[in-house]
Image 1 (cartoon, rainbow, N blue to C red):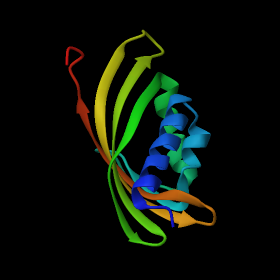
Image 2: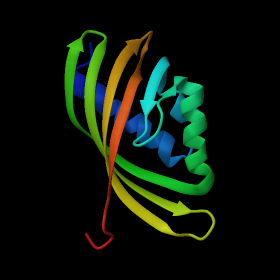
Image 3: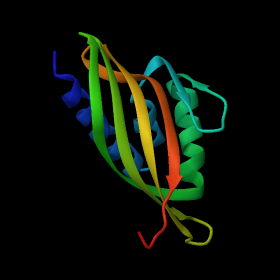
Image 4: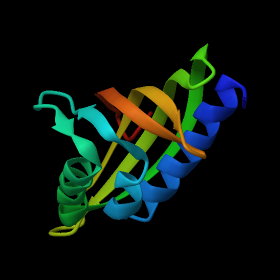
Length: 133
C-alpha cells in the first residue's frame, strides 16, 4: 500500500487539477459511487453525479483556482485513509469580475477501489481571508 500521506498528497493534486480546470466531470470522478459530500450549511450530496452537478453550479458563476496541500493523514487499514488538506481558493465572478479569496480545511475519507483512491466522504469549512493578509 502507498503510505497514507502520499494518498492524501495525490488526492490534493488531482483535486487541484480538476478545480483549476473548472471541470465538474473530472471533479466528480474523484468520488466513489456511494460518496457523500457535505458542503457547509447545505444538505448532503450523494454520488459523483450529484456532486459534479453541484460543483458545476459554482463554475457557472465564477472561475475557480486553488492551491491545495495535505495537512495530515491517517491509515485506517490497507484500503482506507483519513486525510486533512488545506486549500487557498480564489474566484473571479463571470458577471462583473469581482474577486474573492478564502481558505478551506478539507476532511476526506478516502477508499482504495480497484486501482484508484476515491473520496467516500468529504466535509470542509471555509474562512474568508482579507486580501491584505
